[in-house]
Length: 113
Length: 113
Image (tube, rainbow over all chains, first blue to last red; front, side, top):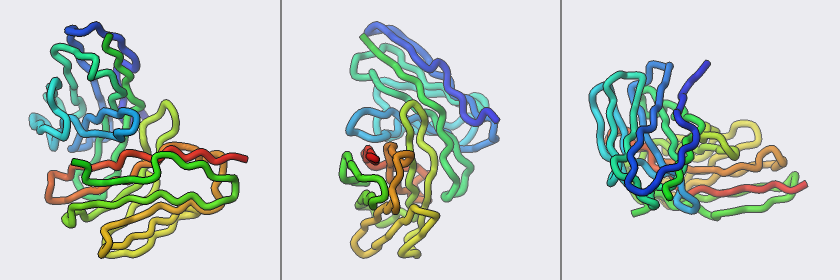
């Protein structure tokens, strides 16, 4: 069972470069999320989606864009990377109900030089 | 604005001891409180969860205690084992807030032999 798959797992960028992180889930979940994890800051929500074709801003959306063209995929884009975006990024998905478990990918470590 | 405050940031416990992690929330609309466990290099995974109409929930060695009036909840790990060494995140969900999951800042637990 694949669950939630993130690609790439590691990436090094130079300031100003762009890139896209791909999240794919095979559980037919409606809700998908992108978080960033930084030491001492916990998991902070960047953007989320409540269904195919919908996206919404989380706590720290600046500098990021997202798209959910297909239900199983949720893309996170950095148009012009900055060193402050160096972080570990986690994608997660869950069924619609409140008590639905969040299933996380294994993370994507991004370094911006 | 940190809506879920978690303490301590790190914790060292001897094998067989009790590990206690505390969380406090501000938004009384939160109606579901899960705890996630994260091992190095992995994404967080659901450990145990509780609704505010229950004061305690126990699953094996893990217990959540919930104090609705104080807006606090805590995770107790009884008979802590080295395999419990991980980072623990408390979280809170408001079903009316597009089911965004708000995480605490995390507690790094180390259980020493």
